Image (cartoon, rainbow, N blue to C red; front, side, top):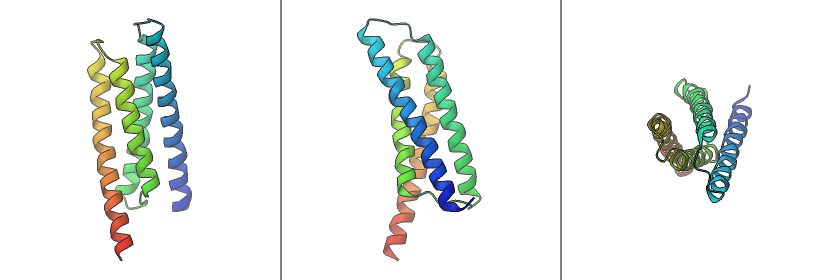
Length: 131
């Protein structure tokens, strides 16, 4: 698969995960407005989305480390948006739940990866523009 096609593939996958996280957040907000406090299913769904996001990011990072792929700014921004969504959703869902630390810790790890990816992509893009 050509580099451009792989980047587009990752963009599409991250867009789908981000869209799912945004829908989950809307569901959480509706649930809270209706006075529902039990978020058992939402917590499971959040954990699944974090897992999908983590798996996707691990595959991407492996290709970057092997120098098979360079992340562009659009993809980096999608990763950053995904991390922001993930942090918001998990913080909202896991309030008061004793298992919250499991989802939240994985979320923080992925946020760290995304920040690193975003930073490196910006540096590379700026270096490329300066050349």
